[in-house]
Length: 118
Image 1 (tube, one colour):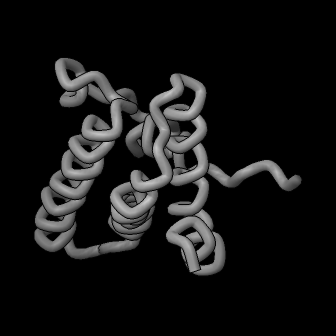
Image 2 (image 1 turned 180 degrees about the vertical axis):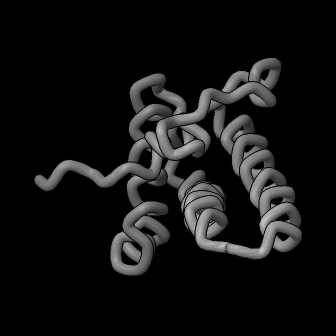
C-alpha cells in the first residue's frame, strides 16, 4: 500500500493535504515519487494539529486549556515548518499565519479541507 493509499483509507484530512501538496509540487514540476514517503508524515502532522486544535475548545478547565493551547501552538508551528520543507510556505513568512473562522491556521485548514468527490 502506498502512503497515499494508506492515508486515503485511514485519514481523510491527511489524505487531502497529501493530494494538495503533491498537486502544488507537480504544477511547479517539482514533484518526485520518492517525496511521498516524506510527505505522508507532514500531511498527518497537519491533520493532527487540526484535530487537537478543535478538541481544545471542549476543555473546561482553564489551566488545562492554557497548557493545551501551548501544545497546540507547538503542533501548528511544527506543521508549518514541515510545509516549508516541501516549499508550500515561504521560510521567511512561515511564522506568520492567518486564522480562519474557527481560529485555526488557515493554510493548514485549506490543505486538509475535504476533497471534492470525483
